[in-house]
Image (tube, rainbow, N blue to C red; front, side, top):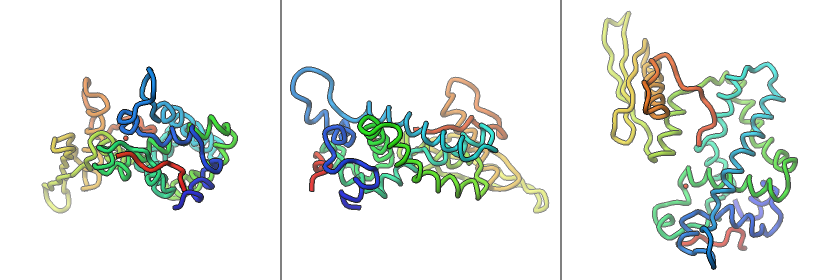
Length: 259
């Protein structure tokens, strides 16, 4: 997507401006090219923090208004399905945001423009910048259509919490590694039991059992999530899982909105 198309989709004024340049500035770029004078390095993490809250509010309001029949738990699960690192990175890719990032040389050399966590964080930073520049009404008018269709498809398909997807989200965010599963079967054909192990970054992260391969993998993923989100306590049992929510929840790039 070219510069003008990305600007139009997000409703960013032509030419962008300093606030949007800041939203596209990764900390690696800021530390290699520090701002003149005293003070902290200038990068997009504060805007990302703001944008995360704004995005969550928009999607939560959409769910509340458009799906009055949904209980709180289903609303949280649906929100986590569309507001997470991988989903936001996909949106950022569709908008061509990676082409406009301002990165340090090291981040550039390691493929930063294609990193899901970096793309997702930058999308949130742009949402924060758009909110400060244009206000909540405009941000809602831009984001609502992006997420309404995705949520509609999920509701129509009977979307439920998927522990494997949630674990993959956390693993990619924290270690850039996709979890792998090992499954073994035991017992007679009419009463088979399956045992699964999930490995993250070379370490056994969780185990689970079930009457099918899918059930065993889901339970192993739930156990791994329990240990990763509550390392000091005991992991939940094979039939329990964490309360799902938005998971989050990254030399120099070209000027963000240069022609």
